[in-house]
Image (cartoon, rainbow, N blue to C red; front, side, top):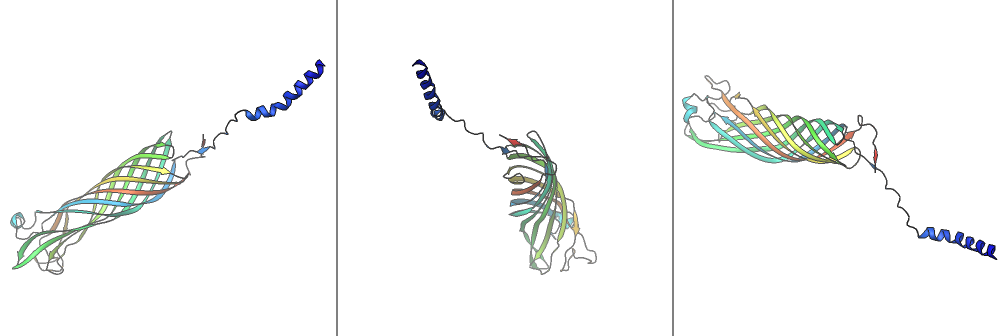
Length: 274
């Protein structure tokens, strides 16, 4: 009888084991690995946004007034102050290298602008005819070569940048209402740029970001002459005096949205993170 009871007890315990196991908490499976973003590599992309500019230059195109008359129209004395805002868009190419959470890189950009403005000067009397001077200022494009330093956190990258900037400016003075009295020039300006940005990599190769930049450009003196009207500034006129634009400088602020495609030629395999 005693042996029978022990056998029955063991059989009942055996049957109850699956039920007890079913009541025990089950450990959740580990989360799927998340691929770490490696910012090392060559990238190419485009950008678009909005820009603001302040341009300043002097011209001696103020015949018959003050020091410009007494100095033979040689001393620039009529200030031109032009502000504009408009669309900006272009492209960029660069390379980055990541060590730990720190990311360093170099980048080149080209940006075209819709930044043009027209400002009027005072009226004067030329041969008994009222004349108004009108100045046109246009920023055609800028190009930059910069160095970057940033910090990566998960899929985000925060960085600062700075370096060389250059650009092309169109300047023109018109004498109205005289038809065809204009003196257009195109100058190349040089300077610096500095900026700050943030970028998010939503795939191992594609990233989107936003960036703010400040660009400062200056250019030297430019000598030209007036076309289409007979005056002391006319091209080829006997005894013609040069028309000069000088002290040319431009400041540009811009906010850009950027899209980059990164080639993982230098980054090696992507490591899984949990």
